[in-house]
Image (cartoon, rainbow, N blue to C red; front, side, top):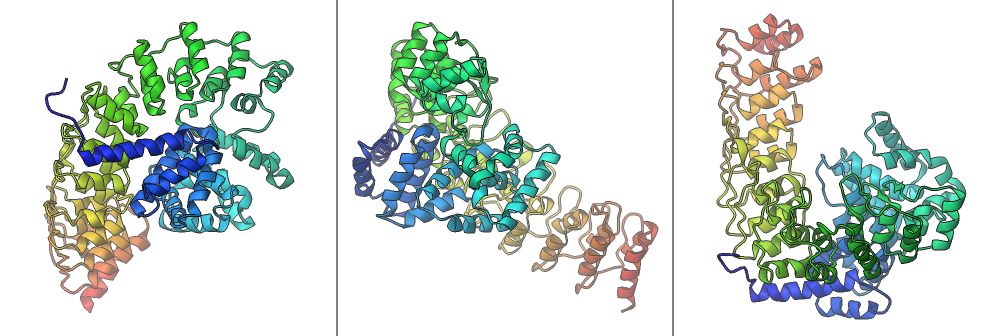
Length: 621
């Protein structure tokens, strides 16, 4: 039980109710309720504001993930809404091509969005030219996002002109050689000769249906039991074999592959499910992550399949988590009423049902679990992470907003690694997620985690989502906070070669650009050691920069340029940096370090004779 009230404000309750209605429509969209759903969206003014449209797009994508068989009608629905408000097109493109971390390597998550975008293109909502224009902008701004580029290639290869196709194909071949591709991409590359035949007929078939037509997975997905029976007989298939993961089936529950009967349960393919059952499919078989048939059945939501699972006395442990994640709220209640699963169950990967309700942004269930079932909104998983931590990790800005509006939610709780949810957000999340934290009065924006690293240090290192410009406007922000080694956010920006952050911080009033860490190393020392010419130029051009700052060893930045600490082995890079330093007004080349050497003498001692000559020429001038 909770010690303090968890109720939402009246305004938030109204918002949750409206949002739940939207989710109900999108998750259960059919030709029958299509017009009613459209009226709801229009009447509730989702299309009138950028914020409303963004929320609508997020929920369209969630629905396409949780209910993959409805992606076609969701695209039709989107097209009908665009006829009312064309700006919705921009919101979709912005959402799909939003910034992502360079460390991002999850092709499945982006494929959920690309699958929806592809279906929208096939419905005539977008042209390939419009989509490719956004992709080219993305590539120019984020050239190192190999994972997203390859995912894009998987979905839009047939539309590419020959030169673009060659570039993407070469990129994929390079990744294959380096063995950095998942198995399904290897298969995709191997299938190319067949995929490209007849104007990419088989490719378009796979994109549309998720599988090649008349294959076992295709028959199961679309419940074509007669064809399935023929295939299993003709091909002598093992009924317990696994379907391999595919970028064209990006739903979270299918990403590790699944046994055939699990696939039938997830898609609600009752005829195929019964056929596999009659042919002695193993009901106890689990996936690599130990997911059970009952969990797939709950995710799919087919009540007849669920009854069969119950009659066969299958293990329903941790099914509440799946019901919460996949917004199967009626099944959630049925599981509780029949005591098939418990709210107290702790899954080592999924946490508790509340954690998964947050991940799936199951707004109605989040509220119900906290207010009706009295689940502690700060409940821990095995890593001491709360539901708010999960919301930050998976980038669910809506869940973050909802949780932060609950008075008893404590955003200052640290997990086992010393991170608050806000700190995890600065490492992993989108701008709108971080903004939700910054708007909350309970957040300490300077709170350090392990090694005294603050969120500002993290954002200065890797500002994946361009949050820094607005972040540094916060009045309470300590611009010069130090970690356990005395390094400031500017040190971190330099260390991680984040040029935009370096430039931003150098132009921000109050930032100490000459701050030294515990070893006396300033950001300029660090930039020189790293051998990054652009960072060095940004610093030496900054107002108030001290070109002659000395470290604890009395080394100046120029000493560092001719030392063996210099990381770039290219002599041209070294000499270019030396040139940038020695041509600056105020540079003192006569300072000696603790070894009694000037930069010139150190260059000669280290046998960097070309560098020594450059310094000597400057002295003569």
